[in-house]
Length: 539
Ligand code: VG1
Ligand code: CO
Image 1 (tube, rainbow, N blue to C red):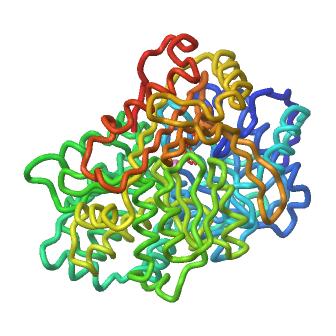
Image 2 (cartoon, protein in one colour):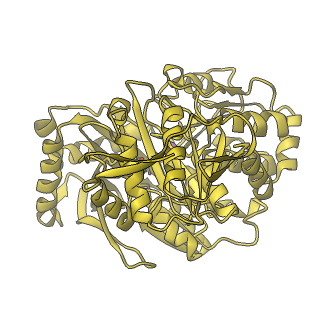
Image 3 (cartoon, protein in one colour):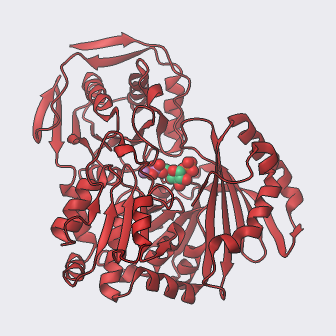
């Protein structure tokens, strides 16, 4: 039954910020998935006795890829696969399953917040026994293997029925189909004060959660409506669809338009939240109010003692370098550890494993804690609901009081998409070369105090990672430049801007940042090099 099939390598299977991410049409090429998955198996080596979790966000090709992986896992001698019913598992839920059951790792089939469908994107994230995505040393070894692969193993059996819960055997390998929601709900019940949140809803609090037709619909329905008692219909776009119903499941002010319009209307619910395709990102909204992810991380950290699971104390907090420095001020006030890492959740894993941090977050709508090793969209929303339930304050009030206490980091991200890779690489290389000459320079009222590449030394494995270029000003303002590592075509330049204020707390972010934006555009010569006067996406 086991077949060994000859294949030829693809040269584009290098993992980016979060796994392999490609156009669906690319992934649909002959043996594309097979080559990549076999390369992972080859790098792992001895697969006897190993168990992995498998599932995805239900996007186009999820069903086909999952069958291939099951049959290949069996042929390669893996002992067992734990699979979400109908092939569904959110990224945070699968991390939980790895940790809870001490599995050897897992595969999440998702391109996360990228659009889905036949003309959209597909992806695979590979996690190891840490419950988080494998470190760069492993992904580098896997990439090397993809370039040399000449055959893969697969079992020649009919497709497996993934709808029936329970155990079955495929080609000598055990598979267990599980309810994708159950373990996750249990974990959330252990972390948060569900009875306080239940009371909040019982007293008439209203919310809207937009699952964006992606994987979190069933999780959100169960938790917010069925268990916590939010009124029926509080969860919208709740059925995962292969093309996300045409939505781009990226929970931000641009792509989660339906929710944003609702929250900015006079009759909005009290709370609005959204998640991305695979359920690891979150957006938080109040009535006519948006909380930036950087502020959200700072606010959650400041309120750790309101949450049952964190009451006893937290180790520390980390953020990606591109994220605003708001959480740094909170860490200082609470006298806890504070770390700045490169973009990508895998850089938080060692810090969590070594108990250096409890919370972490990224400006890209990612927040999480050491309960798992991925960011967690529903966790962030429950955290906010828990704070609201205990304090009785609104999203806006909580945020404004935070600014009063700590000052406000005005923050925005500008994405220049669809640039040719050569132009983008040259722009970054030239900018990096120019950085030393920028030190000490003045741009109007802004004085550059430091201009350097961001280099991270991992305190646990001593690895060194370079990611992005940072310009710091003497008033605490910052510009961060980096190229995206999750796109499926061309290059995206991300420019992150921040300005710290202690007095002017109620201004328009764009107004506050417009001078720094002009400086950022000028220094990197963005218009002349990319032909773009304006960013394509602003968040
Ligand atoms: C983006 C975000 C980064 C995030 C990554 C994966 O990466 O900026 O913060 O960790 O997506 O998120 P990049 O390299 O395109 O900037 V997900 O929800 O797509 O797994
Ligand atoms: Co995601």
